[in-house]
Length: 215
Length: 215
DNA sequence: CTTCACCTTGACCATACGGTCAGGAAACGA
DNA sequence: TCGTTTCCTGACCGTATGGTCAAGGTGAAG
Image (cartoon, rainbow over all chains, first blue to last red; front, top):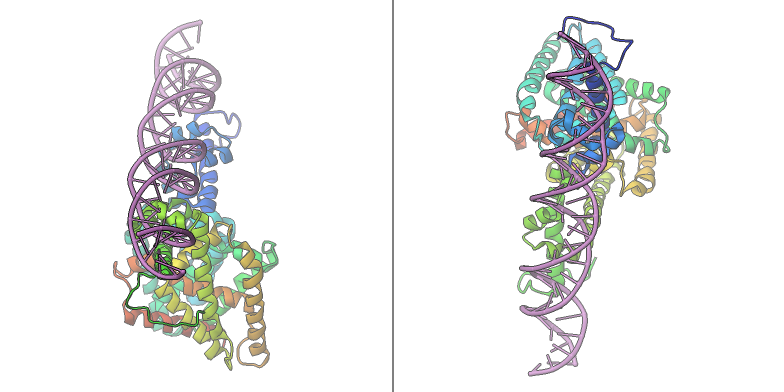
């Protein structure tokens, strides 16, 4: 927004930096607490403790619990939308869908909390992001469906139902975040290693791309 | 279970019937409320209202909110385990996995609330069913992995990683319950029709079975 | 009818929660 | 140094929640 894209390294005690840093810490803590306890189970006190701030300070930066929650949900949605660009400018499904799976799987590993908050939000009927679903997500979905249909028409993949393919992509990739605890338990209690994550990505890509007849 | 499989039509006011009927009504209401509000967001008052009973009566049948919640989670887990029998006694992946997808998709349609409660429970770290994950689910998973591996060895399907295939099956089928609201929104706000559900099942089966080289 | 086990429920309690506020501290610009 | 804006926070408040309890209702057995 502002024109001075300064590095702002020295003197981090500046007013703007204080606000930015505190909001960041609060959002990070909130994402984790909302993911682990749900909206109803999360408490402002818990978020405050995790952020290392007094509870009253949270209400200085975010008026209400809902405001804070809304910001967290919007955050993961934007991250996903960014990743969705993998889809575009791809010559065919192998590159496009392959890159999309890679991106979504990476996000599942780096932003598991955000994914859970989103899942929770949708499961509860999307009380705060219903408008996003009806506008941004619907438009995005229709756009990708058109791309997939084009690939089908060009004979680059089997004539599957593009909508259900998208659902499968979302379900499968986000499962590694949302059900990460179950996966970890079935992995002997240990988180997936780098190697296992590569294996997971490769497996998903292999099964999906073969499933749509792209390989 | 009981020997007298009576119809119990007339005179439903029997003691046993009262207990059974009230517990059923409470569990049904609880499943819905827990699914829609999460454990933290659900209130005993709301469950009581939905069940048509005074709140104090809930505590007569279920000592605590946790007890009630635990019963709801166990319920959906048992339903899934029953469906898992589709896997066995199948000559190959087309029949076994095909039937499993059918069964899981049917459950996603008939028991969406239970599926959401399970998802929520796992996302929050499985505080009340961790032991199930470590025993029953782990054993079941290992058993199916062996079955899938046998099919691979017999050349009935591609050599995919059985574990990730199972994750894909769970993710994809449960997505239609857990993210049902999102799917409905993307469907113009209307729930999937019978025809659309058949299309969904067919699409999932087609992509998965092709993805593992079974068709 | 009496008994007794089981069921029902309004009223109540302690706690925890989201949110407020006033007063003070710290960070600027002039 | 002074004035002003921004930031900080302990103490507080109204409310809603999970859970309790005592008193009363109900139906079947004897």
